[in-house]
Structures are given as C-alpha cells and as structure tokens.
Length: 105
Image (cartoon, rainbow, N blue to C red; front, side):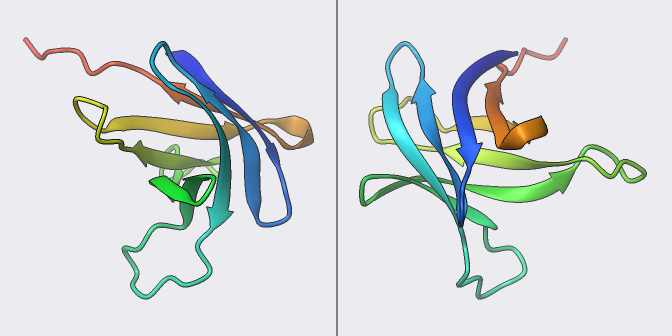
C-alpha cells in the first residue's frame, strides 16, 4: 500500500494534499450534509471548486469498531478511477492509502 495523501481533520471534514506521480493537489474533504439517499456518499472531495471524488463510511469488519472512508477519485486525465481508503490516526491526522488491484490467478 502507498500513502498518496496526508490530511488533518477540520470542522466539516479533512484538509490536506494528494500526491502521486501525475497528481499533486490541495484537497478539502467535506461532509455531505445533503445526502438524499442511503447510498449517497458521506463525504465529497474538492480541489478548489472542482469535485474530484467521493467517500463512504465503512468498518474494517462486522465486529470491528474502526471506521475508515472508502474513497473513489476520478479525473478525465486518469485512465480509470482511483479507489483508496482514508484512515484516521490519533491527533486528527489521516492518511489516504492506495493499492493497485492485482490480477487474479
């Protein structure tokens, strides 16, 4: 797994940066206060006024209380969406981690 983002918790979400070989952006992760359905994202990712992704609150397992955000980032310049996870650590610090899907077989 690679850490592609570093964030600090804020009033309505997280603020930080995403860095990859082709992407380097300041990002604000805002809580989605306007959820209109159960499947709507819990958070939205913005760089400036442009939305670049969404996240849903998940748990590591049914009997584990640790929550994380399941993240999907997309941009027309990317060959396919990036699927990642945001894990919050002590002190309001959070890391966005990504792992390439490996072919099965």
